[in-house]
Length: 277
Image 1 (cartoon, rainbow, N blue to C red):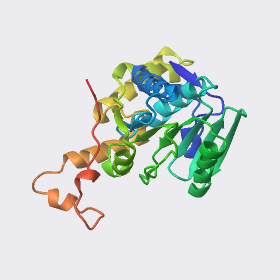
Image 2 (cartoon, rainbow, N blue to C red; image 1 turned 60 degrees about the horizontal axis):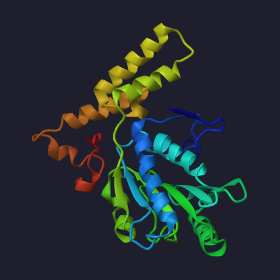
Image 3 (tube, rainbow, N blue to C red; image 1 turned 180 degrees about the vertical axis):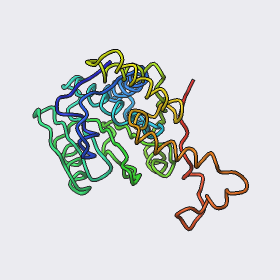
Image 4 (cartoon, rainbow, N blue to C red; image 1 turned 135 degrees about the vertical axis):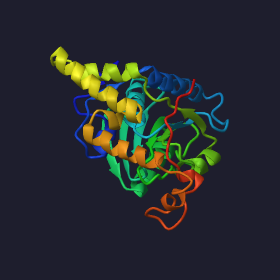
C-alpha cells in the first residue's frame, strides 16, 4: 500500500531533505501498527494504565530499513485517524530538540524547537489541558533517548524508534518499563513493488533496468532501503561492508583503533539486518 502526502512526511522535513511524498506500507509496517493499536486501545480503556509499560514501546530495527519513513509515517497517519474523542494529541519528536504537535482539538499542527520548550509544552498538554495523547519519538543521530519520565503521564502512549544500540534506550526502557518490538527488514517482493511504483510512468525497459539495479545492490548489501536505490549510496555501503569483511585475526587490532583512541565495545558494533521468523 502507498500513502501519499503532498506536503511530505515529518521525517524528511525534519532532516531538511527533499520532502518525500510516498510512504510504503508493507505487512511488517502494518504489523507494527496493529501492536501499537492494541496497546493504545488498552491504554485508553483506563483499566491497566497504572501497570508499568502499558502503552510504551521501543521499536528496534537496522538503520535504513524504513523505521522513520515507513513505520513512523504510517503510525502518524493511523494515530491521526484514531477516534478524536479519545486521542486528542499526537506528538512526533525528533530527538529532544524538535517536535511537531498535531492538536486534534484545535485542528492545528505546530512546530516546536528546543528541549525546554517541548518539555513545557508536554506539561501544559498533560497537566493544564488534561489531554490524552501519543508520542512518536524518533531518536536522532546523536542517539539521545527520551528523558526518564517522558511522556509525563501514564495516560499517554509512546513508541521510540531507534537502532539496536543499547546506549540509545536502556535507561529509558528500564525506568519506564518499555516493551521491545523488533521491525523486520523488507522482503525482496517489497522492494520490487517500490521499484514498480517509482517507475510506474516509464517504459517497461526502464522499469526493468531500475529493478535490476536495485536487485544487484540488494544482493550485495542487503535490503537497506537508503542504500539500494542510489548508486552512490550503495557504493558507500558496499565499501564499508568490504572493510568489515576484511577484518581478521591478523589486522583486527589495527581496525579496533581506527579514528578513535579506545577499543570498540559491545554497544558500538556494526548492525546486523534483522529478520524475525
